[in-house]
Amino acid sequence: MLKSAVESVIDCMASSKGMSEIQKIQTEHRFKLAELWNIKEGSKVLEIGCGQGDTTAVLAYIVGENGFVHGIDIGSPTYGSPISLGDSADFLLQSNLGNQLKMEFEIDILSPFIDFPENEFDCIVMSHCSWYLKSHEEFLSVLKKIRKWGRKLCFAEWDTRISSVEQYPHLLSILIQAQYESFKQNSESNIRTLFTPNDIKNICESSGWKVINETSILSPQLQDGRWEVNKTLADLDIELKNIENMPSKLTGLIRSEVKMLEDFIKINEIKPLSVFVFVAK
Image (cartoon, rainbow, N blue to C red; front, side, top):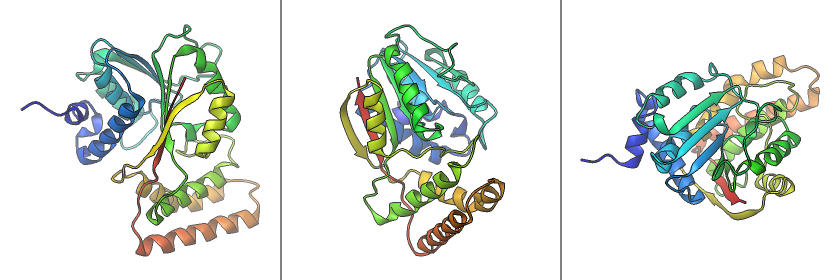
């Protein structure tokens, strides 16, 4: 029997061993994104913030042997747990999809040494990576610089507009993290700057891109909501201890918010936020 597209991609991922059900849910979500972006076979794609390759692998599968996906990330190849970015990339590059992709780490988009020819790519993809950026200003600079590299920008990020009460803990955990992250000069956290859909659209259009198609989708099985809640609760004490010059009133507010989070999840289910998706040209 022929394997499904999702199964074929999972086989190429390092997390297929021991975490296959998690990877299945994550991969199904990325296929939904690629369909909304209308990625075509044979396309040449630049993926910014490729991470461990969840979206990279799906893109490589879709563009096929006549296409190519170049994934870049500012992170170190040693970043990430239980599987590092580098180990995940090595596994993916040695898989059946390896010939139609490239992954590079410690690449700073804004470095003057990083450039590509005009319209080198059919699509530029940013998938669940914008909250890793340091500021609104950095986001604007990135979008301005990459505009000449490709004909189309394909974007996805968590949508802060909750549609059900079960999404509240995911949103609250993000807000808590974003508050203490605003005091850090350097960070390796998943959430460094919180952007709402309106923020993202305004920054996008200020950079010269024009949003031509947007939507919000829900992938209710995604585990990310639970992950962010657990991270918030596990990291809080050490995060607050290590941040200098945080006003005591804000520290108290954050602890109150954490108590709200703990009380809520005792009697309510945790669902992930929806995802804001758009195409710009």
